[in-house]
Amino acid sequence: MSQTYCDYCNAHPEDTFNKTYHDTQYGFPIEDDHELFERLVLEINQAGLSWILILKRAKNFRKAFDKFNIKKVANYTEEDRNRLLNDAGIIRNRLKINAAIVNAQKILELKKEHGSFKNWLDKNHPLSKDEWVKLFKKTFVFTGGEIVSEFLMSTGYLSGAHTEACPIFRKVAKARPAWMRVHKSSRVTPSKPKIKSAP
Image 1 (tube, helix red, strand yellow):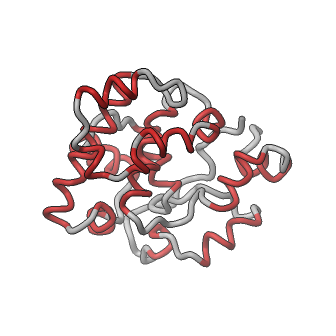
Image 2 (cartoon, helix red, strand yellow; image 1 turned 90 degrees about the vertical axis):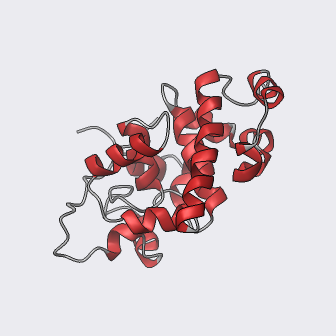
């Protein structure tokens, strides 16, 4: 049986990047649109790379992307794109940088209709993983199945971030993530823990 992310983090407290993320962020609901946008961008940037690399560069990402201010990123110019492509502190991938800008623009469009990115997520919840993936692919760019699944699990819209045996599971439960508020008769089946791979 492969080691889960929970197993790894609980057994390796010396890995402070993963341990802190696992214990204080992963699976906990997020209320702020800018923080939701940040999580989406970071998950997109992980594609093909290790999560520990993204965690180590998270501060650099926040600085490079104006603390993930959605309106500012949506208005980035070609000069900003070139700045990001030359920033060694982040992931210098043209497609991923473009995705951050385009998705910020998409979120601004959602805000006009729904008031906020979070409201849009809440209004569509609950959906199955496959339904979420279809919706994200229709709405955003660079949002494949793994990226969408991890984004939604990490922000509490899909279950599976923590095993029930993990001590953090109860802390997440107290925060009442969206997946836990689904009525028992819902069509959504809780996902199996744990998709994010151990380092």
